Length: 145
Ligand SMILES: [Zn+2]
Image 1 (cartoon, rainbow, N blue to C red):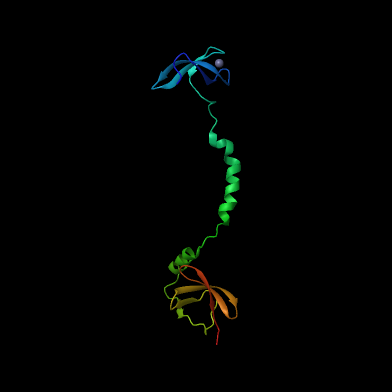
Image 2 (cartoon, helix red, strand yellow):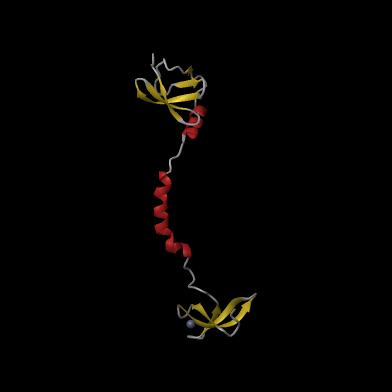
C-alpha cells in the first residue's frame, strides 16, 4: 500500500504523459493529490490519460462481428404474425371449416378442428397450402379426394 511521500505513476496534464509522481495526500485511503517529479506541478491523481474510454478501444470491431451472428438465429415469428392477422381481421370475415377435400386460396381464413383459426399464406401446390396457425406455419393438404 502506497503512502504519502511515496512515488506513484500518474498522468501529468502538463507533461501529457504517465510519469513518476510523489503522493501529496490521500483521502479515505485513495491517492488524491500528487506532485509531478518531472515538471513539479501539483494536481489530482490520475492513473491513466483522461478522456480515453476503455470501450472505445475495442467496440468498433466487436460490434460488427456480433450482429450477423445474431441475425442467423431462426426466429419463429408465426405467433406474432398470427396475432396481427387475427386482430386486423374484419368482423365479417367468413371462416371456413378446414377439410383437406376442399380447395383454398391465399388469404382464406380457416378453422381447423385441432389447430384452430388459420390464415392461408401461400399455395404450396395444387394439393397443399401453407397455413399460419397461432404457433407455427403448417403445410396442409387440400383438394385431396
Ligand atoms: Zn509533469
